[in-house]
Image (cartoon, rainbow, N blue to C red; front, side):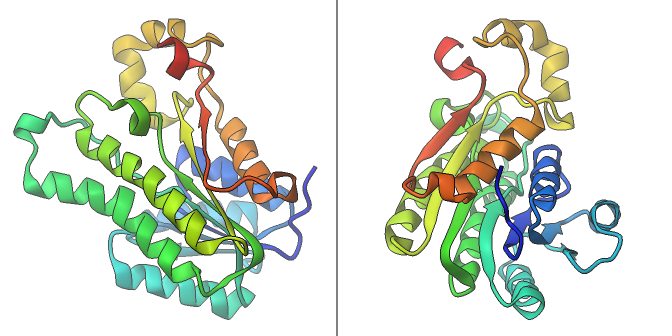
Length: 246
């Protein structure tokens, strides 16, 4: 449907359940890619699976909470592909912790990955983004309605929504910026939650099933494509109706 040949994607947190599907989708659409993740071994294996030649997909170990490592990834994108057309921030950290017993370190770690990393990558990619490019920041349904035992996560994702709107204003009309808010997507991340109350959550979802990672990837591809050329500053829900019915 879309042709991304000659285009370059930078994707953070690329070895996750949703982000792997995003990488596969963009690869199938012809894009060059710089994939970053903290799991260097897993990322390299995934990149080699996608592109044995190593010329189209470049894996880079990055801790997104560290500004200098994000700077280095931006340099790699510039040196290898000359610029960037699409940035998708998918790095995330999701850990259970009640507010009353949350330590300073736990708060800062989650904010560092889920919010600081978005800022660092967006800031560093601005000079590299080509005209007509697009940024998609991955937020969460938790950003809109909160999440029990995940106040640090939902706070970071809520800030990501606001940050994305501000970035859209600053980069318009040259670059479009949107965010997406996935609900329950069938990845390893939500398996512990499903064991506790899976049937209840699925029953509360209007479409009565979990989302598939490739469905999120298709939404991201759409938002990066020319078909979404008049969409910027938006947050798109993708949750099968859990948000309205739950």
